[in-house]
Image 1 (cartoon, one colour):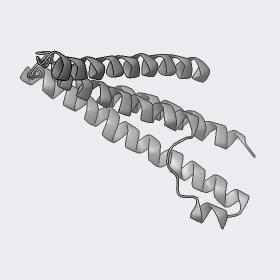
Image 2 (cartoon, rainbow, N blue to C red):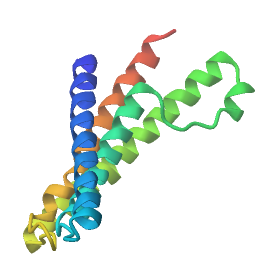
Image 3 (cartoon, one colour):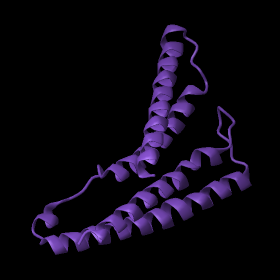
Image 4 (cartoon, helix red, strand yellow):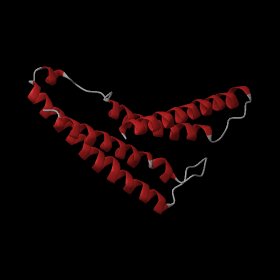
Length: 154
């Protein structure tokens, strides 16, 4: 299942990044070549960047490509390294659940309840904020999977 999620994330991230490139290209073209700047492109690129950043963080987390300080790890025994890695995964799970999932769902809910819309595109901001709980679910899934894989190693 993890491989399938990785494939879907790779595809979604590629599409979002491609849309962002096309959007910025249109923004530059309309502003400097046509002298008629497009009203929505700045806002759309900002929202696409949010989605790419958060989903990209989830993808990097799943691939183990996140930033890590390995100074302490070098001084630890194999058993201590495993305990440290389990603790790190547990902290990631708690953070992803409390901050990204619970906090993200509350933000999305409040945004929809208040009827907040974007200024140029007039779309509900709750859709933009959905990137938080979605990336939180993915990060939590990857961390739980890694946690249990570490437990299986003896």
